[in-house]
Image (cartoon, rainbow, N blue to C red; front, side):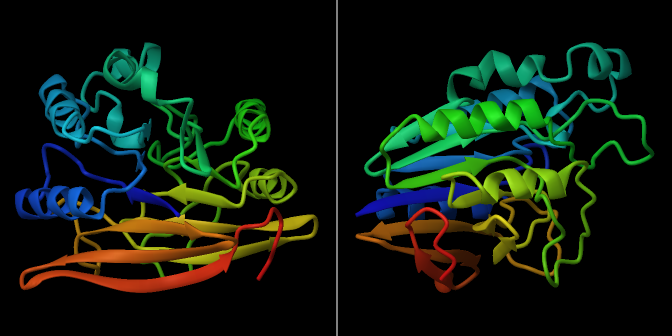
Length: 262
């Protein structure tokens, strides 16, 4: 059995202290084999926010994969956002970005966030297809039974999510993942837990979005996900952090074989 904890959108600087404490307790009690963080560790990309994120994540003594989000760039320093948008992120988390392996699983990272873009909403995601190919190759090199890709932005808008996404090259990225050996794409950004089977002409994959641990809620309570692989079965649970205690809810099950669309 391999267990993976997925968190996203912690937003230190706008974090929910109660949710942070409850998530830490729940994750440590579950004893996952790996922790995957899908971006937006900070609210404004400030040094003290990154320090708080690093201090908290250092409490988890297990393999970690950490990717940046659009809030992990210096929000008010336009020059730095254009020239070195992820300098502070890299100083603390570069060793956790490319891949993490534990049990029968490997997770590989992709940065879909940008410090600046030639479009009105700089917070939207963009996929560099060459970097995606490199990430998929890293996953393909291993014999892991479960292969995951983690990034901040969903490639497609999630069904029913209040925040719609317009990830540039998302459809082409989806096609590449569907044709690869990666079975699951882990994301954040929308602050909404979700499991969606993405079927493409050349294959499929499971899109799994995590909720937030911040006060920036969008119609859902603070939460994180637990992804469990037993034999050929993968189960995805959301853990809602409620005032009367955590509550686990099964969001989906599927077969872990590459390109198994069941």
